[in-house]
Image (cartoon, rainbow, N blue to C red; front, top):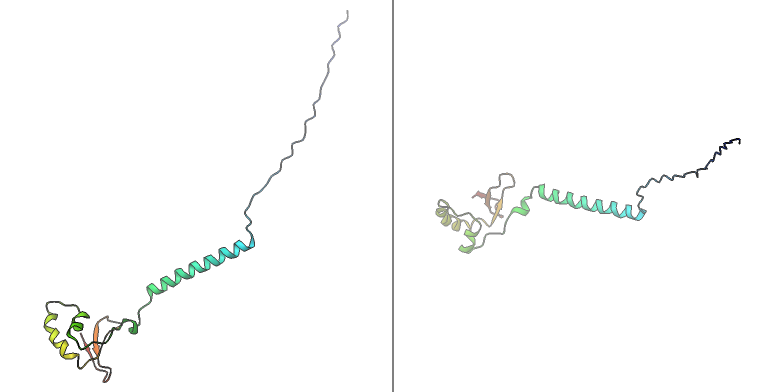
Length: 124
């Protein structure tokens, strides 16, 4: 008896693996870019307008108040009343006939009475 060995080699063929590399990125529609841009412009414009309104100085025309009336009730309404100022109320009542307006100085912030006919001023 003769012994024989048979060697069988089996080769398996591997299937090739195909990889697809996908890079995802966001590409919005053109209308969305326009809407987003306009919204940003409106937002920053409104923010700038609010900031400008907050920071600007008021002009004298906006600060000046209504003309003094000939009633004694109206005189005390426009002034701060302190212990010292109560003595001046009678002086103010006599001044109503001379001065016909009241305004505030834009630089110092102090109030003054003025006569529109003569241009005279008196600091309060």
